[in-house]
Length: 324
Ligand code: HPA
Ligand code: ZN
Image: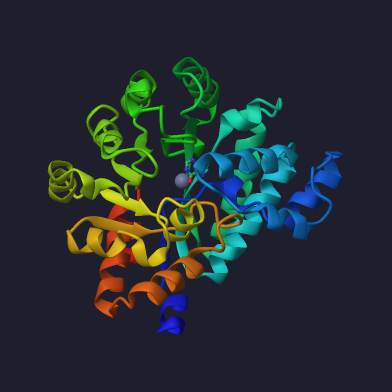
């Protein structure tokens, strides 16, 4: 069964490119850019990856990405992730980047986008992996800052397919970003929103009704509101679930307590992804194997999860047929 899962063609729909920064590359880029890291070794970095909650992870995640400065840095980061995609039988990936986190260090959106898209184009030519880039706003910053960032990104609009919302959830409900999401939607961008990871089901409702999210990232608290769950089922709104992330951030006590089987049983359009694989114990295959170890899902269920991801991807009809 593990060999079947490892070779199963996959689609990644919930992945933060900055969350693929492995400690080895972190050190290499720190040397290259003369950045002093608060760690002495790769082992020490890995030992620091003990998280209590989302915020304790975000603190290390933002610190780690401080080594990214040049177009080449963003290329190297993305190329390393795409090699992992190839090794994990990922055929298509839709990845987030956090432009505001890099603008804060004086790195332009042009530099970020150029490095990331050069690697994406190369992976399509080399591996046949297709992709889409999603600009994610940091919900713990103001909507004004999100709007300014959106304006700064518009000259590069042909390089991204949608907008997302991530970072510290509790206390930063979706409604805070109504204007910028309305703007992006009217400009023709896809809309996805992190909701119901640590935050309540109410935030999923806000993401859906106010921001008009086409997919909910995480959404593992959906079943806490039966009316909402019914709507999600009826409207076939995908939930991009990240099992290892939820365990590492203690959103669930352990994998056996994960609501994944209940979400599937409920008829929700669930898909599985890796979120921040350098920080959460592994890439797509690691997530699939951890789920299988905990729940012993049938091949039919895996087939359903795969088809859900084909349905949830933002691709052309032709590419969707090829992915099926
Ligand atoms: N949740 C919210 N924001 C994030 C995450 C996450 O898991 N990873 C990177 N930014
Ligand atoms: Zn995420």
